[in-house]
Amino acid sequence: MLKEFREFAMKGNVVDLAVAVIIGAAFGAIVSSMVADVIMPIIGAVTGGLDFSNYFTSLSKNVTANNLADAKKQGAVLAWGNFLTLTLNFLIVAFVLFIVVRLMNSLKKKDDAPAAPPPPSREVELLTEIRDLLKKS
Image 1 (cartoon, rainbow, N blue to C red):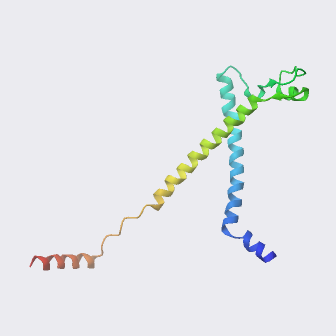
Image 2: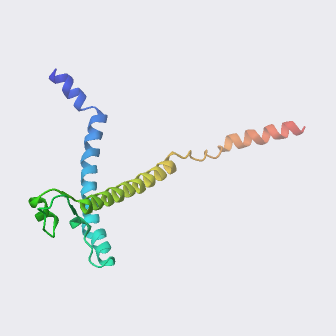
């Protein structure tokens, strides 16, 4: 049974999938940082210091806090600003992945394009000339 598991784990597909998951997680972290540290501050600066992550709607009369962390401690809140931030994060990640896949597909198409056939050898050229001369006579 251990031998079967080792054979399964060492198959190319399983190893490729593991590498893809690790790279995908690292790529997701990079894009999340780009959204949180680059894009959202720019959006906040354009909108006058607006920080979407702290926007919420109180669902309880006990909530009097002005920020989301304290409001969650006081009672039920609808954290729609955080949802908006995460949705924007998802859309940016999806768009960046789309661009990467599209770029990879275009590079793959270039590699898959059939190569031009090699020019005929000197012998083939001579034989073709002889054939053409024989057709004429």
